Length: 79
Image (cartoon, rainbow, N blue to C red):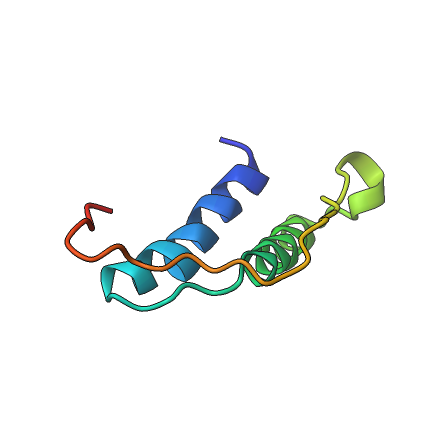
């Protein structure tokens, strides 16, 4: 599994699935993606790799005009 996908999976679990399991609203999707980028860059630095060497840094582009949150649906929570 690629580092980016690994970090994305962990971040979605922590910031999206966990709150929904506790019947709370998730973080905003842009906050989650920003967190993913930061964790990904941290992982590259741990390996001694600068993003410009052999890995590129993900770029977030959005046309959203409002914040996007995920909220639990009552009675339907099989995460």
